[in-house]
Each structure stands twice: as C-alpha cells, then as structure tokens.
Image (cartoon, rainbow, N blue to C red; front, side):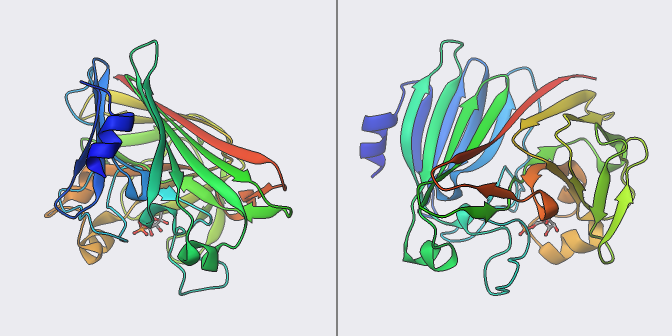
Length: 301
Ligand code: TA6
C-alpha cells in the first residue's frame, strides 16, 4: 500500500507516505513554504508549520494517540455529516464518522507557487451507510504553503436532498490561553454550551478565564487569534461556513479527557472551528455540491 501510494502520488522532496506504528498511513508534506502531516484515516491534518513560524500553527497533543477507528486529539478533525451529538441516535459518534473512517488519496501535486496539494475522498462502507444512507462524495483538498487552505466538498450524487452539519474543528497552537484574544465575532449571537445552552451576544473581543464552548451563528467573518506570548496573529478566513465554534476545555474537562498532554497541554491550544452547525446546517440539493473553505496564515503581532 505504501509503495503503491508513493509510486502513484509521492512527490520527491515534498510528499511521502509512511506507515505509523499504529498501522495508520500518514502523508508527510514539506516544501520551502511550510510542512504538514496528515493521517489518511479521517483525512486528518495533524500539524502545519509555515517556514516563517518557529512554533507550529496547528496544535497536536503530546498525548495524541493514533489508533484505527479512533479520533486524534489535535490537528484539524473533519466533523461530518453532523456536528456535536447526533440529533436522534445517541449511539452514533459525536461530530460524525468522517474523522474515524478510511479516506483514499485521489490527487497530489505541486502548485506553481511551490505549495503542495493533496486531495482525499472518504471511503463509504456498510458502516457509514448505516449512519448516513445518502449517495454522496466527501472530498478534502489540502494546500500546504505559507498559508494553509482546506476545502471540504460535499457532493450530493443521489436523487433526494439532504442536510448536513460540519466543521473543520481546528486546534491552534498558542503561547498560553490566558494571553490570547479572538477578534472578528464582535456583536455575533452565540449558543453558550457551558452550563446548559443559552443564546447570548458577543460583546467585544473574546478572552478566556474558564471553560469556553460557544457556537457563533450566522457569521462568515474572518477571525484573528492575537497571541501576546508568541507575539503573533493567526488569521482564520473562511467561506461556505456560517458558524464559528470557539472552544477551550479548561483544566477540569482537560484532565477528564486525559489526552490533552499533561500537565497543562490544554493551555497551549485553542479551537476556532469553521462550521455549519445548529441553525446553520446546510441543505445540499440532489445533484448539487456544497464547499466549506478555510485559509489560515500567521503574521507578527
Ligand atoms: O467543538 C467543541 C466541542 O463540541 C466541545 O463540546 C468538545 O466536545 C470538543 O468539541 C471535543 O470533542 P471531541 O469529540 O473531539 O472530544
């Protein structure tokens, strides 16, 4: 499998497929603009570091475990075809199945600007069809450079419409959760999921002093993480997404989760997720497609 992948899609000096000890296949990407790693299971981008940055921009837990059928803590998990708990089936996996099932490589190449491109498609199975019986394709296109671009494309190849919830649930690396703010969501309505679920309005920039789990709705705004410790900004631009989720577990939930990297790995991550969730779920008409795009770049503060 590895040899065939490298023969068909490998790019000398830029893209190599390797097998992890867990048996999962990883794509290792490197060019003069940046480097990244991606697990084929879940099309899960695990890390990304532009050459301009001394510290990765996408965070991966030191305790991240790679295992068949299990989600990986960190990176940019693909949440699809629902976000959060399934509406009716509590036995179905939170955030959908896309991030824990096999995907296959469909294309790879070097763009003219020197970025490395990798396209993957979810491999449907009896298991996925049990949870999602609709005829469709789900692709993820990743372009790695000084900017990271990801395109999540849902194509309805069937004869009936369907509705999806989705997110690129990206974990960003920060200096310390007490030394960052998030701008771009001022004035937006959000569902505050901490201590129940209530609808509130964002006043000013977001700062963090405890568990924060918010689904901002009806917003296509670009967000910026301002990191006073690493002295950098992370720009999070998006299209085809009308929800933004902002999440830090804080100490109690992080310790319960057990894979956030002891003793306080959770202090060095912040999730800003480009999504379509809750009232922003998307109807994909028969024969149509829907694309959610994110573009990340880092700059000095
Ligand atoms: O996106 C925020 C959230 O929904 C939180 O409520 C928390 O559950 C987080 O996702 C992590 O979920 P996971 O299934 O990856 O452990």
